[in-house]
Length: 319
Image (cartoon, rainbow, N blue to C red; front, side, top):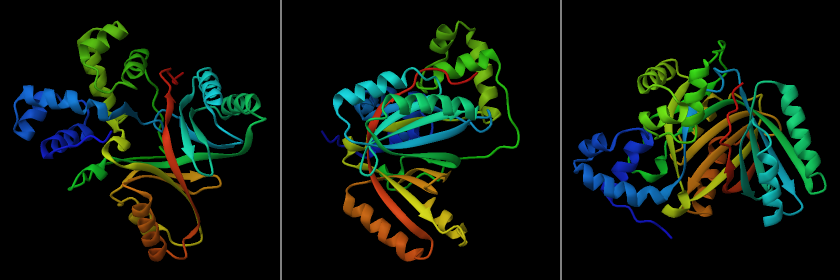
């Protein structure tokens, strides 16, 4: 079912999209409605939320994000349940998502020790060896996270950019506890975090402020179910000619209004671009523009339809 939004709804979504921890009282002031009115609207539009997350700068903590794209003989309900069961055994797994196209699903891992990644991925591959036709391992070296600009007439200019960090930060046990609770529930209030972690509320507040100040927490995000707004999510996987000057190319793709996430990667593919469009025709139009602007840069392009996250890990990946 498509959820219809009026201008006030969109204004509320945009504020929460930029910082999902914004109190409804502040939202109310910004959109010039009563707090009760905003609360009622928020209850209605909560159906749009697929999941929430606290942005963690994994690069600062010494972790690298790995992805594996798989092509299977078939992906039925039984296989999905087996995938999820196996997924839950591995603490470093971030999520598993269903795809439609050349690849059937993807795994995402936070990895500090490459040997650990090899062990985990090999166990996974062995479990499903008879069904795997193809797999591609990608190492994410640079990431751009965007707000849900596809919803709004005036997009946000706020972008979170994660790249390789020279310095590495170690977390205290208290900080790990707070992140573990906040990671998949970015709007949880201080009192509830304190109760979950058995910490004093002031200790929680002080440590959260420190994590934000040191850029370990990069933001508080909400991910909307694009299908409930009449949109579809796609992944563009690109191979490029690395001998060309790609500064203009990168500048262009990071300014695409419909982009939600962009990764620069090592592996078969050089870039992964997550985009949201009304339909495949709109996406194809964007691809044609991209090809015309950069005819000698793009060597190969694959379109993948993003189905859904089958599961997001609630386990703590930190040592």
